[in-house]
Structure formats: structure tokens, C-alpha cells
Image 1 (cartoon, rainbow over the protein chains, first blue to last red):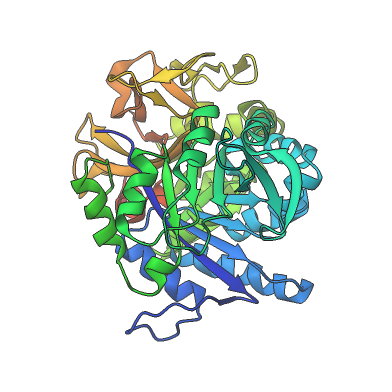
Image 2: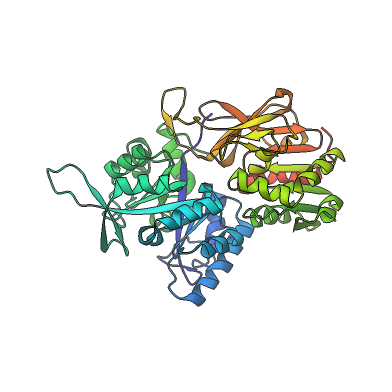
Length: 257
Length: 217
């Protein structure tokens, strides 16, 4: 009898198609985000995150249609991220059926945007994506900085202070990605995750670096994560969602089984 | 036709609850509206809500939704209130200072952890908002629980919780640092703090039960 930790598969989409490939053997259309989202929901995913990497304006209209289609068929929470820059963008996504939006670059360029968004739509639907990279050197105390543009552009912002600021501005949840670990499959940056989780009152989703199920367990037990987000380990069929949930539950973590 | 009116007072995402209801049968017709005549002529009514209570209550009063809900409840029409919709039914909320609510159900709305920090029984700090899947203990044998196992998990996302004054109205209870009302019931009114439209099988079953409910309990 307790709140369960969440597993959140993440779909990266471009012009309404899932990229970074999903390799389910028995899926009809591996690029169709609606079919993939439904599959994950049926398998017991606790939420779905839909990350839109479409650059063009026309492409974004496709994204709205995709979000509508997912929300019409998948009855678990849906977060939409990527290119959320204005209150109108948020309204469009919420009206399309998203439950939460994830704000990334726009929060860095204009922190007031987060405050306005939370006041207008409520903190419960405002996730701030925090992309952090370790900047301290060997022997120094750990220090992480916020990076934008896929980890290429430093901002000079201290990650822990930034996360606290975003929560004070109304963020209802933090999606924390270690840019050092993203794509490496060596596990979350647990020290980073623990530091941010301790610093804020709101839930923290750990992201970046998952390569096996023990990494998910470590994220919760040692990183203090309230939820774990992963893409490739699920997309490529290395592990299924039920397998991941059982593995975590067997190690004493409260899960929705 | 099973006509369902989802009350629209301009506060956020009504798409999900409409689509979830529509997915449950070809004979289900959902209308998203603030028109009193349309709402009161529907077979059943969903009273949703997201966001901050002050803004919700302002719109509820401006559009006369308060009178519509009271009339529907008095007429014995099945009404399902969800999340902030449930909170709006109470006497008042601590959110945004102090906001007077509809007073249809006795009780108040408080913040998890008050102005401080929330802890569980083991002394572990709990995050606020209460976000995710938690167990709901069924306190009554209500028709809306039919086919749903006791202690099933539903999806919650809220920082404020309902403390009812009349415990006989408690239909479901959840624990997050302490026990709080996950569901309240009074005659043809059923109110839930969680989001059935986002709670997969259990949530859809509750909505299915609501679509079949005659308002008696």
C-alpha cells in the first residue's frame, strides 16, 4: 500500500514517425507512434513520454495529430516534449490530449515562461527537462551544469540551483537527463540524480544511460528517482516492461504489477 | 443513446475523459459543454477539473456551473466529479490562500504536508505533488466499484487532498503520508481524486460502471 515508482518508455518522433527505431518482431508498423504507445500501455507502462524532434512547422501539425491519436486510444498519462516554447504551444498539446508538457530550452532562455505556464495550466502539467553535465574535475566536489542543444552548449547554470529555481517557479516534476550518460548504457548518473532529488520536493524522473534492469533499480534505490525513463532497452526488445517491473519489485521497489 | 455531458468551464484537457468514455461503446455520445440545458438534459454528467482551485471556482461561478451541478445532484442524475472537480464540491480549499467552494459535500481541501514536509510511516520524505499510481481501498460496495479489485491502483496527480467531514460519504481511501479521501459518494454523486480516464483497465472499468449506473447506491 504505497505510491508505486513509475516506468516511462520514451518515444522520439520526427514528423509523426518514431525514430531511433523500435524493433518489436511482431509489430505491423515499427514507425507508428500510436501502435507503439498502445503496445507499451498494454504491457503495463505507467506513462508514455512523446519527444518531438521535428524542426519544421508543418511537421509539428503532424505531431498534434499524433498526440490526438495516442490520447484517443491510450488511457495512461502522456507527456509531450520538444519545441514547447509558448503558452499557445502548451494549450495546443493539452487540447490534443497531452496530460503534461515537458519544457526544455525555453525554460533556460526565458525562466518566466515556466512561471506563466504553471500559473495558467497548473504545476501538475508542467515538467521541466533538466539536461545536466558534470563539470567538476577529478578530486573536486561534484558539480553539474545545465547544457542545451543536445549537450553541446553550456549555460553556466548550476544544475542543482537551476532545478530548485524551476520548482520554485512552478514546475510540478523534473525530467533529469545526464548528458554524460545519455546513450552510453552504463547507467544513470546516480550522484546527480540523488543531489537533485534531495534538493527538490517534486518528483524526479531519471533519464540517460539505462542499459539493463539493475540500472533502473539503482536509479530508484540509490538515485532517489520517483520514476525512470528509458528508450532503447525497451524499443529493441532487450527487456519487456513486465520483466522490468518484476525485476524492480523483486528488489523491494513498490511497482504497479 | 447514452448521452454524457462533460462540463466545460475552460480549465484544461477534456479530450482524455471524452475519448475514454467514447471508447466504451458505440452508443455513448459525449458532449463537451457549459450550456445548462444541454448538461441537464444529458443522461449523466462528468464534472472534471484541473489546475488551480481559485481560477476553477471563478469560472464555475461565472458560467453558473455551481447551480447546474446542484440541480443535477438534486434531481438524482448520475454525476461523476474528477480531481479538482471533486475538490470544488467541498466547503472550501486551502489552496490559493482560502477559496470558498460549492459546499455540496461537507469537508475541506488541504495541502499534503501543510506548509512543511510530508513524511511516510518510516520517516521517508514524500514528494508533493502526489503523482503516480496508488492503491484505493474501497470503503463501500458502491456500483461504481463493480468488477474492480479492492486496493487496485489508480493514477493520481494532486498536491491538495479532500478531508471529508462526513465519513459515511467515504467511498474510497488512499494513503500518502496519511489516509485521505480517494472517492466520496452521496446519492447520485460520485467523486474521485484520481483520474479514471488515465488509469487504464481499472479506470475504464469505473467509467463503464458510471455509464451503466442509474444513480442509486
